[in-house]
Amino acid sequence: MNHENYLHVKKIPGIGIPTIFLLTGEVQEGKTTFVSGLVPRLKKEGVKVAGFISPGEFSGNTRIAFSLEDLEHGERIPLARAGKVKGWIRFRRYWFNPLALTAGEGIIGRAIEQRADLVIVDEVGPWELEGGGWAVMLDRLAAVRHAAQLWVVREGILNVVARTWRVPPEQVFKIGEHDEEAVAARLSSAIQSLRTTSE
Figure 1 (tube, one colour):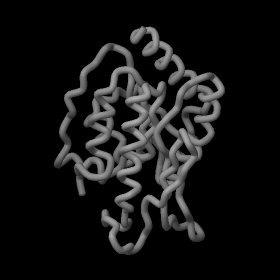
Figure 2 (spheres, one colour; figure 1 turned 45 degrees about the horizontal axis):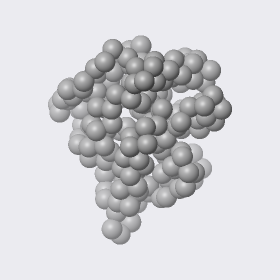
Figure 3 (cartoon, one colour; figure 1 turned 90 degrees about the vertical axis):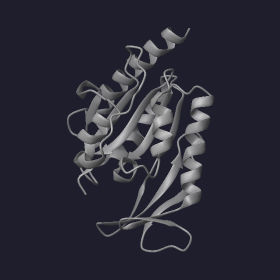
């Protein structure tokens, strides 16, 4: 499906300080692995990190499932699986656990309420562009002005996501072009600016 058909640019308030950053790469290029390495580096610098990642489970070279991992507490819950699972919600080739979707919303809700410095969402995909998955949560998160955010997005839908949530090119990190140190430094700078503004 061509996502340009239902592209809608969100009305997001701005304060002049970047809040939403995108991390992108091809499918299975290591986006989640990159974030997993970035998080402890930022925590060591005193950054309060919240949100979630979605590590994959493989059979050979084929991804067959995802888990939802809470970055604050380290807890995991099955998120999606290729093949039918009773009571789960189908989107394309995967079936999604409604309990994990609810858990993800709760993780982000707590991150907002507890004023995390950085909120990570892994990932924003085609389902969100069609109004499903984390779409409602993303709109709420995008309106937050006190926290920096890092959204993981596959390369194929990067431009649509960036246009929908009004993320300029200078706030996009690409696997292979940006290393952990550079991304951590950019995020830390944005977080410090946001802290200063909210004081």
